Image 1: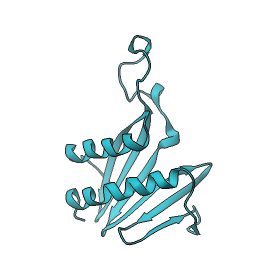
Image 2 (image 1 turned 90 degrees about the vertical axis):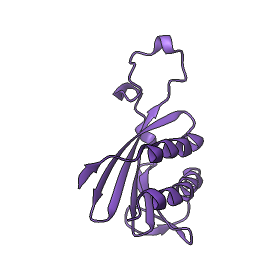
Image 3 (image 1 turned 60 degrees about the horizontal axis):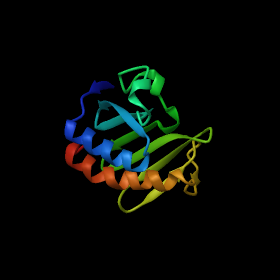
Image 4 (image 1 turned 45 degrees about the vertical axis):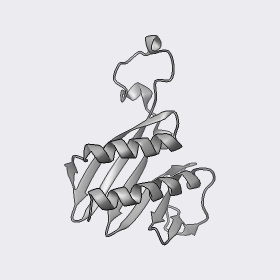
Length: 138
């Protein structure tokens, strides 16, 4: 896979969607595209909601602010969206299309929606889907 630059409009819209669901987090996005598949890594960071005078680092994506508990990966291709991330020591994935949503564990077995993050992931997927269609008609 090769690293790719995401359109700034997509990054800003994705950041707004994510901040609505993860209130005290910001995300760094890195993307790779290969043969019709877009993969975006969302790396979580705490926001600077505390006193700026006490911030040890000016860079908001410094490792000091990392919050890897909210990291996840997005896969997009052939009008199909998948979100995958760690949840309580297991990798869970949401396979999403506007018609159907399915949760899978790391063994590929169907599971029920995890609480409480399942609702967040489904809302994020529903919001990102039309934006991905517009920016990445893969």
